[in-house]
Amino acid sequence: MPETSASQSPQIKSRVGAILRATSGNFLEQFDFFLFGFYASAIAKAFFPSENETAALLNTFGVFWLGALMRPVGAIVLGAYIDRIGRRLGLIVTLAIMAVGTVVIAICPTYATIGVAAPVIVLIGRLLQGFSAGVELGGVSVYLSEISTPGHRGFYTSFQSSSQQVAIFVAAITGFGLSEMMPAATVSAWGWRIPFLIGCLIIPFIFVLRRTLEETPVFLAMKKHPTAAEVFASAAANWRIVLLGMMLAAMTTVTFYFVTVYTPTFGKNVLKLSTADSLLVTLMVAVTNFIWNPVGGAVSDRVGRKPVLLTIAGLSFLTAYPALRWLTAGPTFGKMLAVELMFSFYFGVYSGAMLGALVEIVPAHVRTTCFSLAFALAAALFGTFTPFAATKLIEMTGDKASPGFWLMCAAASGIIAALAIYRGKAVAAREAFAA
View 1 (cartoon, rainbow, N blue to C red):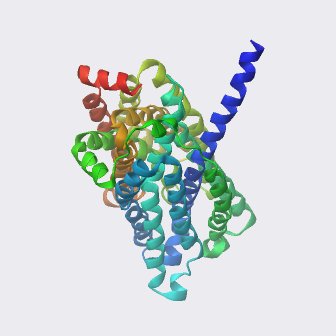
View 2 (view 1 turned 120 degrees about the vertical axis):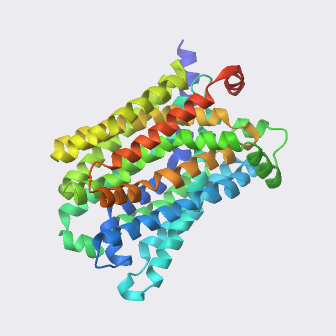
View 3 (view 1 turned 180 degrees about the vertical axis):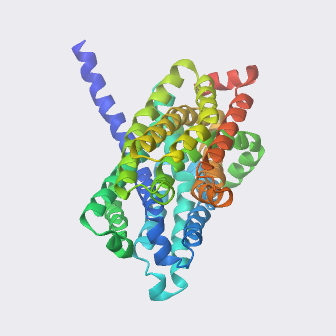
């Protein structure tokens, strides 16, 4: 027994190290994404000045969303690259592109300084980030699935999403400290740049981690690696799987961006709670997101992906609007925390199961491309559109709980996709082959 434990210990440390190195780029992406959402009001004043505060905010969230529209492009172009040359080198390239976008946004002068060039530069930075993010999540998920041990694919893959929650946690702590040390006017004027600059300082460390990644045994075992043209052709031929994957991932992306990127704005601008309250809620959500993701992955490894996906999506569909209606009827810190933690549970458990499911249903030889494209489309058309959609719904209807309808649509999409994917013996055979 002691010999067995000793032999297992290095293997466990090696796998933990591989997970940390692979997911490090996710930290940078979500750190910056969260900051963009949390400081949306300050960014709007700096780069999109307008007499109408809502219009400026919509412009800011619009740029946030436009960056996401580059995700499908990145998924196809960079996904084909990773499926051809390997997971390790591809993840280093995506990090480099993302780092450039992050630095551009952090140091860009304001509209008052350089005029219309300011929003254009910010948009370019967001487009670069979106291009990289299009394959970052898929590349990491595929990497984790390919180094997983038998019967634990959902658990391993779930750490792609869990790693993002660490970024949210650190960003929320940084924002909270900043709000305590500086007057609100100073933070709005220039203090908001400090967390972005901190993100820039983290970049070299993440590069060092990524460079020590090893290639996955699954990729090395492939006898033939497809050319870019073959990857594109195969991805097009599997458009039904990509479409269903997008629908499956829609609930993950919408709920995630609601409880992280949009929550600070929702708390401050809609519920009229303090900045500190909004940050504390986001902080708690990041912690519970981190916990629920591997729980969802592990449970789905045990009972199957379908029951977990349908149960959580069904609960979200039934409770999203009533919960927000209850919250907005009399906003308090406690009620906001309760509602957001409920959505955090939905997101984490569903995401943990969904990531494993999406890896399993896409063809192995174009796994990165198809996974990334499905997830990128979900993020672009649903997830990153959430702050804009929620703001617009409230403006159009006057109902502060109306973002619940957007959450319900995402849940319905997940239910339909899960029912379509997990049907018949063909799916069972594919799952058995993937396992």
